[in-house]
Length: 260
Image (cartoon, rainbow, N blue to C red; front, side):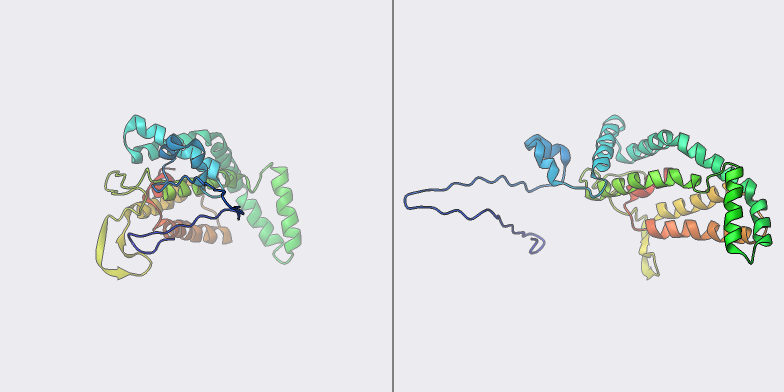
C-alpha cells in the first residue's frame, strides 16, 4: 500500500500455527522491491517473473517484450526496435492481408449490384438480406473476409499495450523527437488547455490519423447512392475516432500502429 511519495507498507499473511511451550517457529520470506523487469527478476529467481501479469494476452506480451529486447540489442534503439517489430508482424500477416485486399476488391465490384437490390427490395428487408447473401454466395465473397487481419491484430495490439505500459525497459527510451516511448510523445505544451487534446500536442497520433485518412482514400472505390455517402462519412469518422483513442496512449504503441 502506497502511503505517500516516499513511503509504502506491506503485510504478510500466513496460516495460524499453534506453538507449544519450549517450541520455536521460523518463517522465511523473500521480498523483491524493484522495477518490473523480467530479465532482472529471472536472474534472482526464475519463477518470480510469474508475479508480473500482462493481462488476458500475457503470453503474447512476454513474447513481444523478448523480441523487442532482442531487436534492441541489435539496433540499440527501442523506437527502431518497435519499427522493425511492426514490419515483422506485417510480413507474418501479409498472406491474410492479401486475402483482405482481394475480399475488399470483390466487395467493391459487387457494390453496383447491391445498390440495385436495395432499390428493388427497399420495402422488403428480409428479401433484401436473402438476395444480398445469395449474391455473396454466387460470387464466392465473404463479407467479413476484410476484417480477419484486423481481428488478428487486436490480441497483438492489446498485448503490446500492456507490455509497453508495464515494462520498465521503455521508460525514458528516446526516438526522434519522442522523449519517452512509454508516454505520449508530447512534442510541446500549449499555454492554454484545449477541448479533447488538453495542453499537450502529441504529433504522432495526428500523423497516424492523417495517414489512416489517405490510406482509406486510396483504397476506396467511388460508388453511387447511399453507399457513397456512408463511405465519405467513414472516411472522416474512422481516422478521427482512432486519433482520439490513441491520442494519450504510449507513443511506442502509436508508433507501432502508425507503421502498420
